Image (cartoon, rainbow, N blue to C red):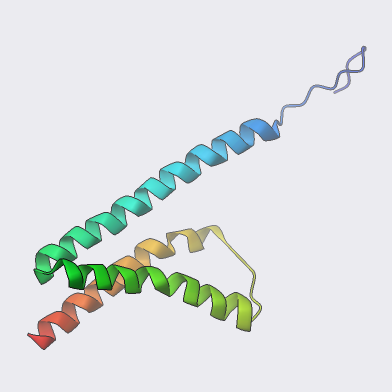
Length: 107
């Protein structure tokens, strides 16, 4: 809505939107970092080996760049939705369960 002296007031401020987005991003990153740390500690406790837990977490975390190379590099799929953000939690849960199953089967 224009004002008489040439100043335009707007209810939308991209600076405030960026600040809000940044705070949400930091909070979500903290949740993901906590989840990775928790899974690492639980893997170390259950497997009784920090080395196996570190290898397991490394395999889980390197699956993401590998998946990006396949989807965006080979198949040229660049669509990104908000549901893909929770993939870290889903992959952590499924992969940690698989590690437990394989370890128990090995024992």
